[in-house]
Length: 352
Ligand SMILES: *Cc1c(COP(=O)(O)O)cnc(C)c1O
Image (cartoon, rainbow, N blue to C red; front, side, top):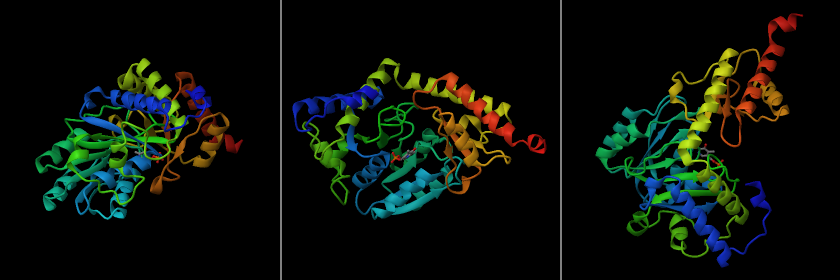
């Protein structure tokens, strides 16, 4: 995949780029075969946040009310976006790390029967929780509310049930579970929306309808050409590797290995229900004896980058992702590094 970044640049208005553009679009639509032919990928140059914002801006009608089901940083970001875009928002909030509050979603929909959409995050990367979208979709269905999902950190590695969940769209990043480079994101949207509903986007760059209208030619604005090369190569590797089922199994077995190695060191998962975790990321309680910075720096010195807790979880949590080109041996070595940090910090050692 890295070699793809060294290829010559292309003019994005020439047929060579347009062939690349179409090929990447086609490969994206094959990631979940059941999404075809009703859902189409609309590719943007921008990070995952650009796709989430474009999805809300373009697909939620102006003047509509939305219900946001939030249980972490990214759900709250969807709320902030919907508000910044001038939509009426009703919140179904639950504490970070806990499941989506389905009763609160039902109550919000009952109080606001005209709510057009429910906004939620599939894999809430704040804690690693994979939200139960089967259950959320069942709550939305009787109200006729359609789902807009942030699947930025799950697309390509967890199951996404487009039709059964009554999805309007989901937002995707090229550089998470798909293993491309940063710079590209996409919205997988139900194609009929583009004919049925005018865009609600207040501006131009995040207006999905403009990109959709240009689908047979060049994108309307200069694309990140090299990120397209990289994503094409990453999607080839994805297909050769057996698609999302295989990727899920790889991530999951690495995550379970890290979890058991860390538990042997008395480091415990943050979520009380272990099967609440996605395959992509697990979160842990930071032991009292070590600071996050110390753990981070020791891991970094050995070539590992871990993530801190966000918001209130800062200083109390660390997060480990097994996404990307990570091997079993890497993860064994990671647990050894953590073990050494713990040992260096142990009171017995300090007393000596
Ligand atoms: C990473 C992430 C985003 C934002 O992605 P950027 O690429 O940093 O803009 C959005 N939602 C979720 C769930 C994420 O994990």
